[in-house]
Length: 107
Image 1 (tube, helix red, strand yellow):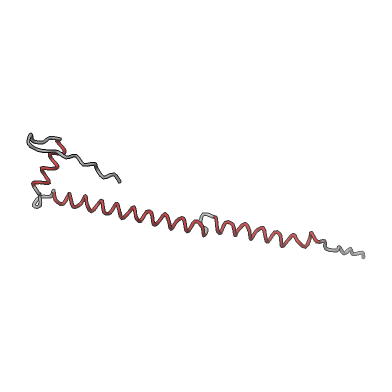
Image 2: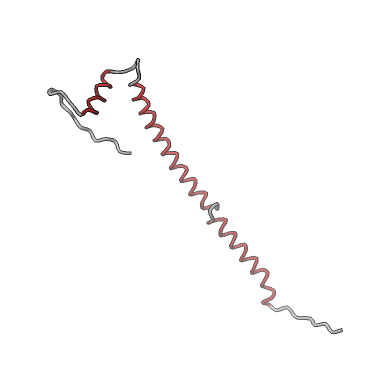
């Protein structure tokens, strides 16, 4: 019975380690740059901070509007507020009044 023994070449010894290195580098790259990677976490945290600031400004605006609406309810109706709203809606003034137009706040 004849057996042949092959001597391992240098190229054969490097195949498995090089494949392992390729797999590790692939997964390492995606662990950092992937959709749920380390880099994306920082971007998501910055986005969360921006959205929380926007939420705070929207809540403040809502409280301001609720306060103005509360002034228009029965029992707490202020004549000045009603007069101001009616004049603004109808776009009318008296002959002896002075109208000063102020720029509106733009958000």
